[in-house]
Amino acid sequence: MKRAMQTLALLLGLWASVATAQPQGAPATQAPPVDLSASRNDQAARQLVQPLNNAPVWRAVNSPSLGVTNLPEHEGGNLINSAGQDWRLLRNGPVTMYGGWWLVAVLLAIAAFYLFRGEIRLKGAPTGRLIERFTLVERATHWLNAACFVVLALTGIVMLFGKYMLLPLFGYTLFSILAIVSKTTHNFVGPLFAATTIAMFLIFVKDNLPRAYDLRWLAKAGGMLSRRGAEVPSHRFNGGEKLVFWGALVLLGVIATVTGFILDFPNYGQTRVQMQGAWVIHVTAALLFIAVIMGHIYIGTIGMQGALDAMKEGYVDETWAREHHEYWYEDIKAGRIPAQRSAPGPAVGDARPRA
Image (cartoon, rainbow, N blue to C red; front, top):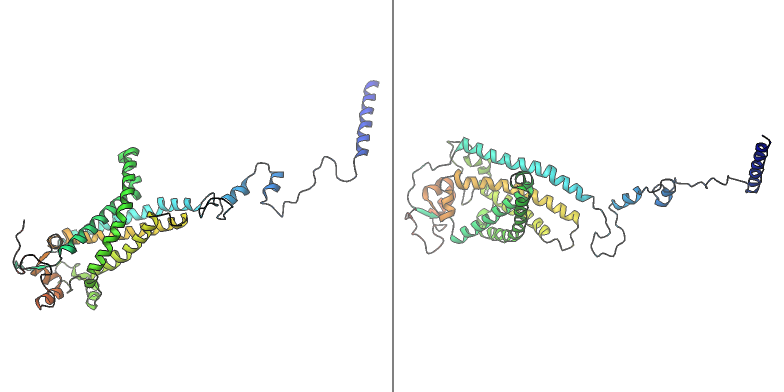
């Protein structure tokens, strides 16, 4: 007991000597206070109380502000482009979903119209006398432009919807090959479509200038909504065809072409945000363009008697011209427009042999 008391007294004496040797003020074991209120996001200050907390660094990395870099690219100082995720969600969400249902709705509307109206047939008997509606140059330009459009539409649909429609059917390997081929074909056919669109504009713009009677045609939808109603008179191209020319070929064609070139040639200073915006505009214009052309294809094939023959062979019967384009037919009969614009060809008024 005596030894224990001696040991305790020795320890108390050592503690007293150490305590008297310390400077007056804060305890020796207490770190000096750090004011973090003025620099909450300062990484060095945060590390004092929250070691390994790198949240401020990653917030800066994920921000749109650019850092310092030796890379020559415009966005070289941006480590993480969060807009890419926003674009991905938009592309795989609203654009794909609403775009797909939009095309389905257009197809259903065309089918419903066909069931209601059927083929628009001639009311009078063919005369056997033919009028040249399209020259060889006009038809060749039209078919080349149409072929480019179909290729672009199909390859674009593969790239936009193939992940959901074709991948489950074909599997990853086959679909990846199809997607790569579609992308390459789309990129190379696009400029050719632009060239043929310019040619189409130069060839057909004269006969597509708006006229007052086009408004009457549009107001009555050309009489197509009535099974027995007479068609509204028009010239070489009616109000609906002019709407397709200016609204689809010119407006949507220019938008799709310009944005397509931005996407096709990304090495002229475009940023990723600009490329993503161009893609959204390009796809929106393309989906509208496809919808309009689906209606155009319907009328030009099974929707109207003689329309496909006019673009294939270049000639229509006088009855067809009088019933569908009365003002054009009257100008031809009055001699203001030649009935035969190309040579050589069949004699005007003679029936051409049919295959």
